[in-house]
Image 1 (cartoon, rainbow, N blue to C red):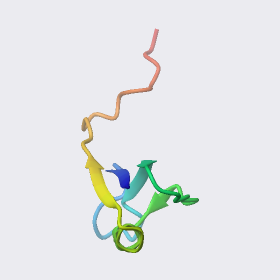
Image 2 (image 1 turned 180 degrees about the horizontal axis):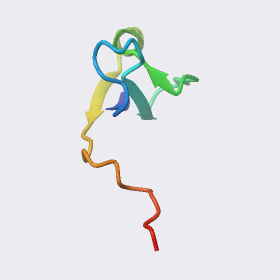
Image 3 (image 1 turned 180 degrees about the vertical axis):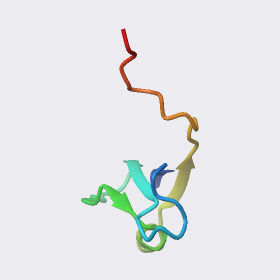
Image 4 (image 1 turned 135 degrees about the horizontal axis):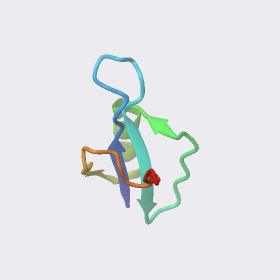
Length: 70
């Protein structure tokens, strides 16, 4: 089983906010109800289920999905 996550732009280290967003899960029977998750919670989930954590890269711009001004 694999858990795919990406780091959030607005949650920086030391801000006391969850830093990761779960993008998807492959295989297994795991349901995650939280939109954002902390690294310690993510590690515990992976350890208990035997899953691998896959960190997805970010583009750094955050421009995808936004409408262009006409």
